[in-house]
Image (cartoon, rainbow, N blue to C red):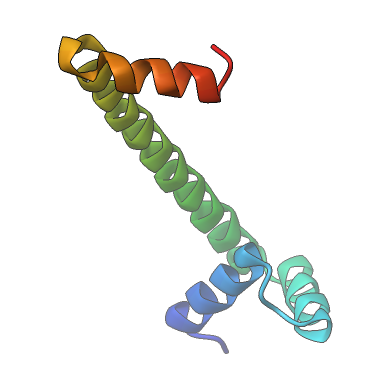
Length: 89
């Protein structure tokens, strides 16, 4: 029987897409045969999605802060113009 740690590692590899084709087929068969493994998979995938979403949100906040800092300071007006030119804004 697979341990929780082994399941977690296997699920992680499956989610990342790093299993080779035969490992992937075997894992998918195990998902069909084991409701417990399927539940662990769904839980782990949900956690990964939440972490990814959180990091995107934090990055967006940091970029907005940086944007506000750079573009609101009159010392950076030349830099601002260069950026606008680069991105055709």
